[in-house]
Length: 244
Image (tube, rainbow, N blue to C red):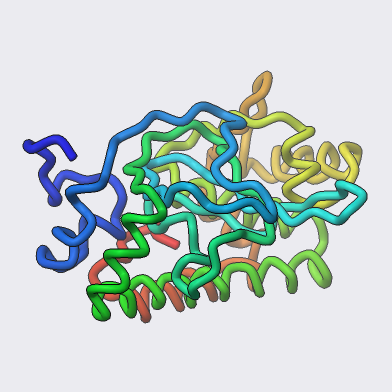
């Protein structure tokens, strides 16, 4: 870790809001790294090498079948971390994790992370609270994919991305949105056109621009909000406006 790194200036809120003594258990092993789009953070059934604490950006958690059919099941941004199986004493992830929107991360080797957990029960319990909040996000995604129409699910995903990016422009292709939502490109196109017609978003080449967050909230309705509320409840001091 660079000696001048100031905890209060960190963009990852999970680290920035740790109690100073808990942060010091991780700090000597943290390295700042810039990750490009498509960078693979974790590969299914392979040993986790590092834990990443992202700044503004998005790391996608993607479940896949043996036939390589995949769908996004969760998002990680500046509110959280990767490597959650390590919190349960498991060294492999059952999913893939890759960078969807480029970000800088503070990264720690898995071995150093595990050692910090083994010697600091309070830190371990604190990070398990984040893992619990993340599990609610995954459960909500399953509910939305099974019960809600595509446009409502897309509005939810855009809100979640807005939370993690802190800006209105989201660089994405229809192919990515198809993977994210588990639908064909034609369904993505129709849902986007519906949001454009409402005035909630605008579309440019390879980019979606959020024009009216309130309209997106109205469209998402019950699809968005529960995981965000749970996060605010179980991670006091970490959540902030538009945090998830």
